[in-house]
Image (tube, rainbow, N blue to C red; front, side, top):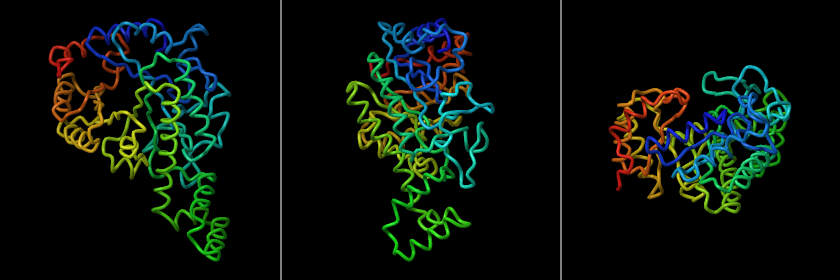
Length: 353
């Protein structure tokens, strides 16, 4: 999505090898690969003319090619470089108080351990308002889109976010559960040496409350999107085990799907072991209760034959489709067709036909 040539190549390869949908990342790290009023143009587009609109151009190229186009939007994950964003309008520079923090009030700029980089605080109402403006603009500005796809719609892990705003909002949510004397005691501890006093007093409620923060955003996103364009397919990339997703990522995606806030999910079944992918696909299809499931396959880290085996496996489990992650990796940024050639020889593009 960084030049007209690369966009044309995406469409060319997708049609040549029988794909029917493209999930194109238009919000990567709090930036825009489209015409945005709210976020800075992606730094990777610095060498392109100011009027180059990657998403708009791709939609024009895909028109008539039989390809659905879904705008892939990273949600709370907004930065992953050691240096600060060049644009002062980037949310990391403009609103540092929106950044999610760990229990020691720290955050990191790049991937290390269980955190990919900078996340925004899901409980911050200003964060949710901003994100809804961003995603609403995409839906309104590009009515040709077939869908909106959410990624990183979660916490990095259960060790986030403990920012001052989260602590205050959580206290407000649970304060009526304790007596006035207990409330005064917890407030005294929280204002002294233990700012996590309320969280430690209500650990189960703390986890439930954080899951609710993400779900609140997804519900609002769904209602807004359906109001703007009822025909949009709403989806999310999700942790493949719903119980572990809810526990460790605070991502209750099974609830979202069963509430019909999403039309489909793409479980990231990226394990190299086909048996593991089979179990994950079977579990998700069963628990989706008839709603369509598109299984994400970690093609970037496996040879083509392994990808073929996984495609066959997820089809046998009743998945509606599969998604190969990612185009850049398996085509070497559009320069090689070898991987796709090997898959095409063994995979029927229409197994139900």
